[in-house]
Length: 123
Image (tube, rainbow, N blue to C red; front, side, top):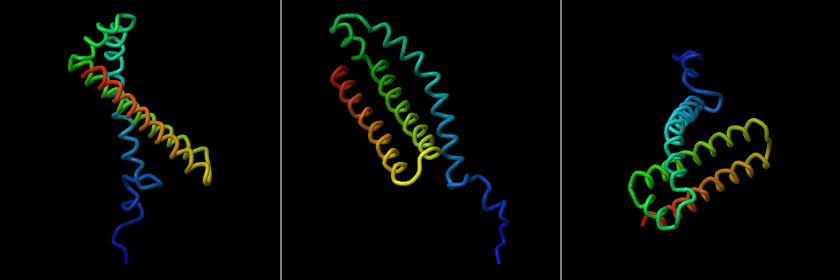
C-alpha cells in the first residue's frame, strides 16, 4: 500500500525526474550571462584593436581575467545544456547519444582552450 499519491510523487519533477533543476539552472545562468556579457563586451571592446602589450596589460588585471573566465565557463555550460535539451527533443536513438556527447565535448574543449589562452594572457 502506497501512502503517497501519484501527484505527490510527481511534484517537483519533470518526465525525466530532473526537469525542475534543469529549468532553474538555465534560468539562473541566463540571468547571470545577461549581466556579465555586456560588461565583458565593454572590457573586450576596449582592448580590441590595441597593441599586444596593451591587451596583455588589460587582461593581466584580476577583474577582466576573472570576468572572461566566468563568461567562458557559464556561457559554454549554458550552451551545452540548451543544445542537449534541443537534441533530446528532436533526435532519436544512437544519433541522439552521439550528438549529445559531441556537444558536451565541444563545450568542454572550448572551455579548456579558452582557459589556456586566458592563462597565457593573464600570467
